[in-house]
Length: 81
Image (cartoon, rainbow, N blue to C red):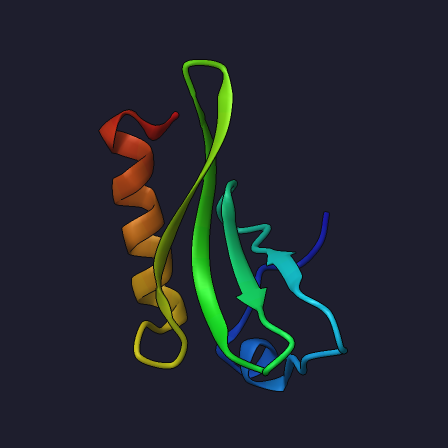
């Protein structure tokens, strides 16, 4: 099993020319999204009515890792899963 994301790991992630989604193994559905410009944000991926959905939670570093996990957990308990 992969290790959970850390604040230091999130800070170290660089844009590699394309959009990237890096899952957080600590919380199913939580992703760090890295844009080609280097902008980072948090997203929650889930299914609703058998269709895949995505909810953007906030931008890094305004929303830190702990806040993103808390927001994702709240989203998961409000009918996202």
